[in-house]
Image 1 (cartoon, rainbow, N blue to C red):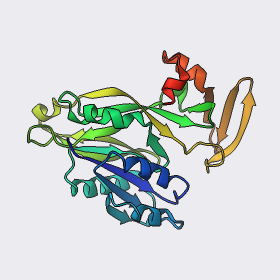
Image 2 (image 1 turned 90 degrees about the vertical axis):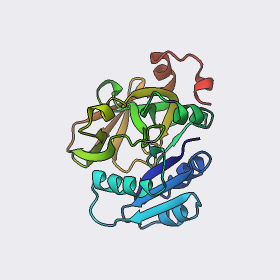
Image 3 (image 1 turned 60 degrees about the vertical axis):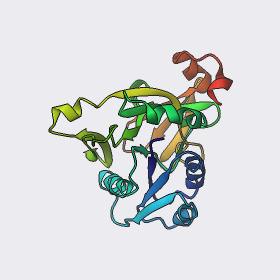
Image 4 (image 1 turned 90 degrees about the horizontal axis):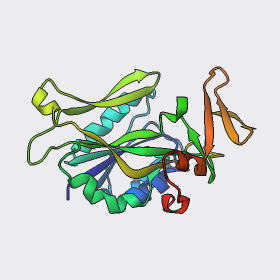
Length: 245
């Protein structure tokens, strides 16, 4: 089977990192961690996992694209066929273990995107951006195209505030023609907005049946929360228990 290396950025993630690593430990070949100067027990937890093959501590000012590109460089040392980008406060549903053989060993896709579920509590999820547009996340990227040649170079770039994007760079149209993106049926869970874990929350209030999160007093952005049952109906899923597998 093709080799998979996961890349994680961390800073003071002791509340989440063990959940993330213990799940990755079941299905990835290698893990790379780039730490931005944690002062808690994050790195002690990281070092306890044998599959963490490379790690780097970069205590300078946070720069998302720079840190993620460091992670890509370290990941290439593990000679992967695929790269998985995942945050310390995320983990995939267990179904990825059954699906992974298909995701990594098909010959038509170079990037897998996943439904990205921001949990607030067991009954509500957060809808990021207008109409919940950020409920998809590209997370799985092919580094090598079978049988032997390299794909266009994968790299992060800065685009807004401290955020970054990721794309393949190439001047070769033939290489670029291999790039194909598809949506997987595997769900990626995000726990960073859970009650008690969101460091950026100013206040949360109820408006009818909806929860509204007001974040950063100087920022007018508002993030709406939807009941899990209503979200599932909106994407055509009727059996909630099967979805929570």
